[in-house]
Length: 91
Length: 272
Ligand SMILES: [Zn+2]
Image 1: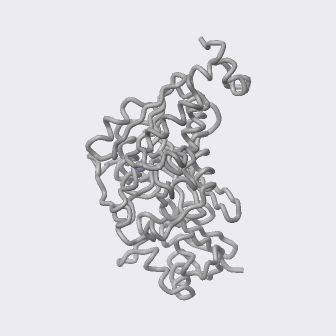
Image 2 (image 1 turned 180 degrees about the vertical axis):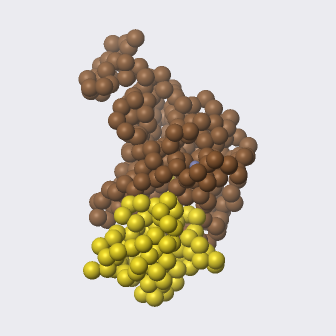
Image 3 (image 1 turned 45 degrees about the vertical axis):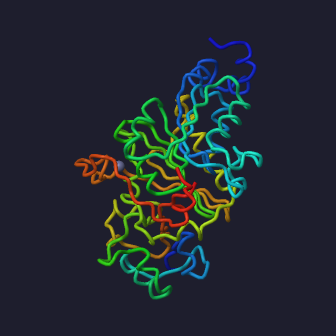
């Protein structure tokens, strides 16, 4: 079954235009690694050089922001839905 | 007291439960500032003007361009080359002769924003760049003004309402703007006009609800719209105690002018 990850429009180039992808991971850190394995280049879009999540992108596990859970240690289980949501500024 | 022509003009909203003549008077006494007369500011200001917002300010420093007209429905073909705020004033005043429309042809900066927003109760951000969006958030937090935020990118839209002191601010959600190069530049972007319409109208609706004191604002909740699957989702936005502007020990004490990083925009001078 795995974990469903919603990819935001600006990153869909890396996922071959797929809006939802499936991953396997036990926590958010593992999820980012798994995403990087499947879609090389995505990690640097999500994390800075120190591996920390960028401050204009949020990751939600079942609609809860991981910054208010356990950051990248937030546990994941099969069936969870993860959304990656970047700030957008167009008007 | 409402005049007879006002009762007639606004009758379809006056008859709504929870609005009535009292609600209409609140709208007529309200002062709302729309930042940007573009894709979001156009639909938002059209509905706010039509609903009878008594004082409606519109800030924008740009002139109408032909490539704006696909989504910026305030302006028309013959207006190309005119300042957007003048075109906006004419259109909004034509819809509703009962309100005061104030064109403000300015580029917002840390120097002038507090002065521009001080005369208004509610601010609607329809700007089109990160520096202005963070400037507007910070200025609203510092001057305790309610802010309706909306943003669009290609087929995506977001909206959130910020009530300083009560609900999380934009930096609670996204602490810092992206640095140059971190997101695709505006030249690669693009937008379907109707997407701007969806989000701009949601912002106008938020403002009307806030003034009327009805319903639940999008405070502490981020609304996410995707045009391709016609989906709306809401994610929770908690107040961040480490927020650099509204947290327990704020690190931002004065307004910041972030650098504009879109080369195209610099040349074209589009934006606020
Ligand atoms: Zn905040």
